[in-house]
Image (cartoon, protein in one colour):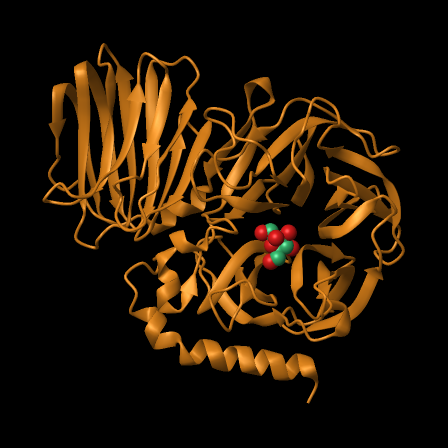
Length: 490
Ligand code: FRU
């Protein structure tokens, strides 16, 4: 039996053995993509191919640590109901012995083709990096074609990974994340006529290029695509210093908008903006679907802060975000909206209209729960602060608090009292507005909050007790109108 087959069987066996331990965990999510067991991280190979969405993700099936990664595989016709398929890639060959790392998928003249990084470490922990191809005829079994880029270019280290490939005017292009030998994060552009012979075009963007001073020692998981008449480069810089409300997570995931020169590879761009204001968001990847939508998914987690994610004690860890559609808004801001297919999950509905809160905190009958969609539309009056408390314990011992502060125009997301693993507040400024729409997708251990039609998003894991299910609305020092509250069970 081939080493690949042997590893795939072992992985399946190991996940099967952990099934019961995993299934008993309340924090298992109800409508998010999770590993059957083991550790999930980056979404990979996201593609709409032949009428079906294929999505892969990084997986270590044997344990909840970052071991040698496999690619897990799912498919869907609607982005909501996903079918788990057999694992796609196992780290079986010498050129990928320490992990089939992140990458992307393309339609190469009718053949679904994966491009990923083969990660290798020797006994002294020295790294090697290979960009590899794998193809499938039946959409389930993958044949590896081996490395097509065997070395990083001169001037860069072996932290050289996460190829995202696309086709333009019959030519293939790839962005890849790396660092210079002086430890400056970079994204490079390569080109190819056949996906096999690749040539370096140049540096797209990076730390100490353009206006990005001291902007990280490594950039991971790049993605580059056209949105309206601009190019958007998404990347995950590591080593960016926090600045007030910005860059508070251990690593960042954000974007630059500009114009790409395909001859030099250079992106003429504006400043870096974070994609998400929450605690748990990283390594996002997009695809263009057959309706022309640019759809993004991300890992709802981060590396190197494993102790926060308490489901590790139960044989699994991490989840992906729900899919979001990207649009280019005013001032070249990328807006993110939940895909409309999420409405398929809606169950029983409860709604209220034309309420007003005056120095009070209220509960509304039927507006509570743990797995739900909630839309609250506020009209700002003179309240100094107002907002929503979610997952409140009846005895007041737990709550997750979203507060708008009228004086600073800041929205804050406070999970310091959310349950197990207390940890801080994230804040962002909201553009001048009289309305505040808060659109929540809540799952057993996650909250995704879309603010004012996707102008800001907060994505966060929380670990409240299962019984903490109250929702409260509040206004301090004045009044606020609550024009609409709508809740659906999901
Ligand atoms: C990002 C990342 C990628 C790498 C993968 C390995 O989270 O570090 O750069 O390819 O995870 O699992």
